[in-house]
Image (tube, rainbow, N blue to C red; front, side, top):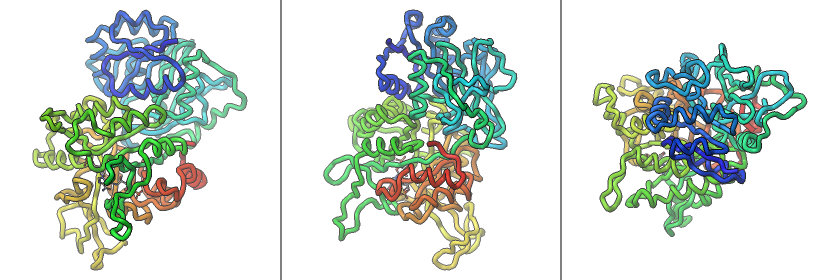
Length: 542
Ligand code: 1PR
């Protein structure tokens, strides 16, 4: 069977193609409305903004053929914004009409009591006692979600031959998937949901709709184990070594060279694609690639990280983030590529999110200089507008600065039990650019808030003081930033033992913890960290 994917300009569909091919199916593209009715199996991917998706469908003449196909009884699957587009409309873009196959409007998550977007691994299964699983969705599995808008599960009016799998986030219950024979629409990304997601796609493609299972514990979905997990993320700092090979390296406080007496060379801790594969197999919830030298003077199409991503995405089915050099770039021949074009090139190679470091600081400076008005021209704003805020992470590289009293600085200072070199009781966190080499007159709270306002969907919070120290996360820093924004915060830098992950999850509200050296050096595996977290009552995915 050939699996047809609708190509109407949606974001990262590379991963979907990779997952389908990995399962042994052939893929082709539908690029014309007339081709829809000829498809024997059609997948409708959706990434980004509801308005963008529905406008593109309408403009290209897809609305009617797609509606007809979805109801035809032939194999049909919709993903993420794809499931939302099956409804009448969305509060995200009320001026656009959806396909109207199901009645009702897509709503926004309530952000008063929780972080929005809903990013991470959550449960999704049919809450009934039919003792059946549908398309391989089991109550104890976790699936990868990334969205700010959802279809509330209450007052849902669907034809009676559809089953609904639900998911809980905070006190809101929403639609995780809708299915009937030959029809599957998911809010989660099956192609990014590891083994559980591949099982779901396989069950769909092979027509394995329902399967009796014994001892199905739907009760699991009602208790704490049914919710969003804390994520454990592996980070690969990538650069060329002195011999010109692309290697994963790791610094201490951002210095990636061995000490002079050890040769002074760039530390080589392995090959990017191999390490990524290893971390996927060990159970990493996400993998981040940071291009720490931005490979200057290289045309965009030849950027070495593009090949790394393309290769990794063929066999790694969890979200991949790429950072380093996400900004407007000029090729050696003078060709200018806008930031959104640069990001698009990475998305098409297999990245799910881009992370912006230095450029986020410059944009935040511009934001405050402009009386907190949005220009809609920065990398954060343009990428977020085109691909959705969930695709934009900002990577912060702060350095702790001590002061005797908060009055000594205009920046957000905290009282700290870890006194400064001269007994200072207060500290603030200064933002840096260019991999920590240049300090700017901005603190982490100002930066995180400005980036959230400009449309960033997540914060990757490094810490120059803790990086490579194995001494644990900077708990005060994580608390400070998490308390300043409403988007997810990934704690980074300093993990040395499993207990450090437990500490950062229990003592702060961070959403994910990232580490590098501990995994590269095999001090302990991701599996071991997760076992420790589970035994400490922190909800994680296995
Ligand atoms: O400014 O948009 O081009 O992005 C550059 C990116 O590269 C930023 O995300 C910046 O953090 C990163 N970067 C630049 N130079 C370095 C360096 O180390 N010399 N890496 C660097 C930052 C921090 C994390 C590390 C954690 C966890 N390294 O990547 O993985 O601290 O480490 P640990 O668990 O071993 O303590 P732009």
